[in-house]
Amino acid sequence: MLNVVVLMGRLTKDPELRTTSTGLSTCRFTVAVDRSYVKPGEERKADFISCTAWRQTAEFISKYFTKGQMIAIEGSIQTGSYTNREGATVYTTDVIVNSASFTGSKRESGGSSYTGSGYQGGEGGYQPAPQRTQTAPAPASYSSGSASDFVPNPLEDDLPF
Image 1 (cartoon, one colour):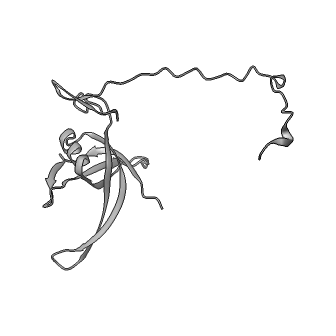
Image 2 (cartoon, helix red, strand yellow):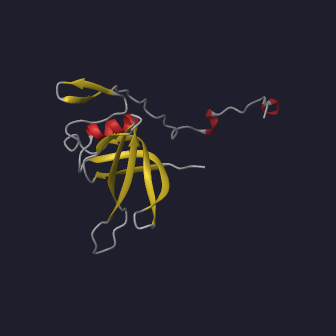
Image 3 (cartoon, rainbow, N blue to C red):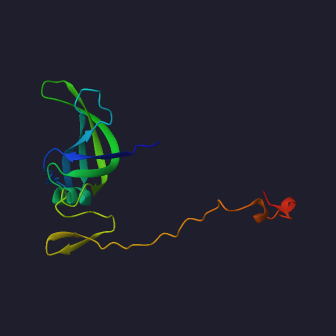
């Protein structure tokens, strides 16, 4: 079975870090995610998705993200229900966040970006870890080859498969 959610949207308000009675950090927030389809003549609509993060992920989100900032999250859907004060059953759907990443420009994220390679403290507070660049080899070109470049395998009958 598979339960994976990947979302990218904007925070509707500043995330607030709380601590459970057992000392676990938790953070609840809502992400506004634009719908991909827009009916002609209408404005783009958005879905407002409730999210919950725990432990270090909760601390990270509450420290580095603010209202209106773009965020990308990965997690899973969790459903539940409870009985409200009027005695009615209320059904809930939340995304339990496993990881969060910065998206958008550096200007939108306060001059910071998350690269997935860790963090380094600096004078301005959060600083991304330095990037390592590698040059990819040029792809091979097979358009100039011919059938004579291939040699038949004389051991075709002895192949183990």
